[in-house]
Length: 157
Image (cartoon, rainbow, N blue to C red; front, side):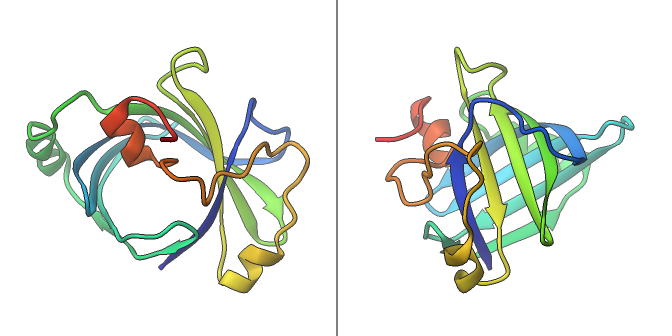
């Protein structure tokens, strides 16, 4: 189960960084969401995964499955367009929370920036007071999802 809130941002925050990656992700299906992802880590290593997501906004089922580079490459041949590129960074928000920030498709002239905070419970998610540097909350905004961006080349409706 994934419980997360999403926000638009205009820059990466000035917080302790816990990690980063260059990420390429594509969608084999958008209903239900079936995504493949390749992540290049700062040490040069790579991780590959397939993710299946259920319906929902704040709360939804999410299943992540590690796959091999060969499996990723084979599934990538099924994609109908080039993978989305994300410059992904994770920051320590304090209180055991992590802030996951991405700039999508290279720069804000062509893509966008957003942040996600994952929670252990719906109560914790609802109690969270976003810091001022987080912009507009888009958790419940129709059409704000990476799979919508994949389908339409933009976020929102």
